[in-house]
Length: 317
Image 1 (cartoon, helix red, strand yellow):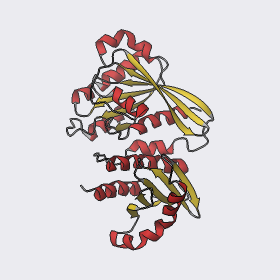
Image 2: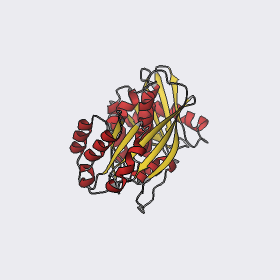
Image 3: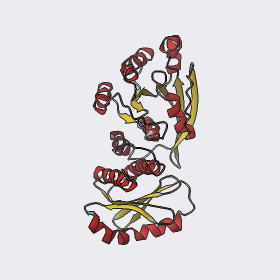
Image 4: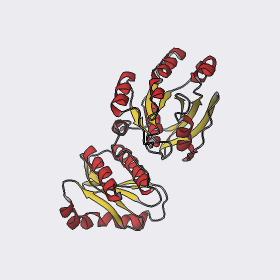
């Protein structure tokens, strides 16, 4: 599939996911149009109108954001909202939406799609579908956010080799290591999730070693005080998926209160998938939790998991 076909698949999914979005384009930081799509127009009509539609905000990108390295901004112009979001160092996603859409909803969908544009430009394979959790995330905290700094403890569970450490490293450092070193005991990392200039969630990430027998006597102590749990499996190894129930049961028997949970299928960049999407959906239904298809190697959907945890935590305030 050529790069324009990839962009078309991704942007078409964005336009169909949100009825308020009227058009979207990908431009470089000099204002050169890379790809565009206007809802309800075929390609022939689009060629004749796209320049007029996007000229105004391409000029704004060149003027206001030419030197910015990372941003997401929404501007109200008449009856439209214009969103600009960096898609890596090479491109900017630009979206025109109806004024009725909430800023949070537009930002969540926009940042998700912008990250996938970055991966396409880097030559990575992606999942073009927009996962259901993005819709959930976009509807959370649409009202007033609490002010201040908040702390949340996330425990990351799963069989050895499913990529728990790699997911955390991708989120914390935006890096991936090809070599695998098994976590013994627990490894703790921290990173801020900045919701806005007045609201920050400090995530404490507990990478629990997957050696079930060796860890059993100590696990309850590591679980204490957790607010959120990631249940991770390797989509290329069905045995790790079949272990999810035992990890969830271990969680239930080790602590006395209900945790928010997300099911994460990691290593989606691999060609072999031993677990299909319907099985994942069914398991998420059984666990009464959302799911995400992730790749720690490419970074696909990884940020969405940790952002979801932050917003979910803020729901209690």
